[in-house]
Length: 287
Image (cartoon, rainbow, N blue to C red; front, top):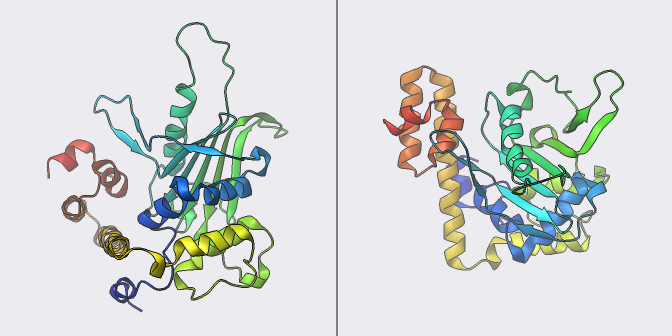
């Protein structure tokens, strides 16, 4: 099935890793129980019972006042910050970007005046939809789809602090069938990878949280206006990803600039174009 055919016939359920699908199924107050379940599956020690959604844009400190785009940024009832991001395009300094974006929620905890440096935890979750070995020098295990990182002592790996954590999930490496799913995290990953291709809910996903999720994701239940909005979003995302693929295939500065122009025409954010193409902000704005 071609990409255009997929858009014309969007299937029974929303693609949860599309921008529109992700914000709808995980980024709204109405369905925040879905995000709570997923966060607890990744970081069970947090025992999250409630969350509040934070502003998805934080102002950077660079001279050009760049905005950093977060897919979802929320706070738990205990004051921890959780960043959940879907990454669809490769980026050379992906790990470094994760450190930079997470640092805002550490810096912002400092009150005016005297302070004893008592910090609340900051937890990041990166969901990758492409082979992760292409984005860093880290030795990704071929069969491992879930990695967690924290600050540890170099020799014996004792943890320095548990307040600054990173989790990276490679959907591209997850290939389990419904009967092979061992826990809630794997069930969420199965849905991330397969929901848009399903016609019905598998017997193995009969928990109440997934009953709610499947109802929320069913396209036929959505108002006609939302269905059309979802299809338009899929079309734009496919155009964007195809443009990036073209730049990688052709290579060269001129091809990259051509892709950047196409992305600008699609109203893609400037900071997203910078990430996708490697061009500077000045170069993008000059096109």
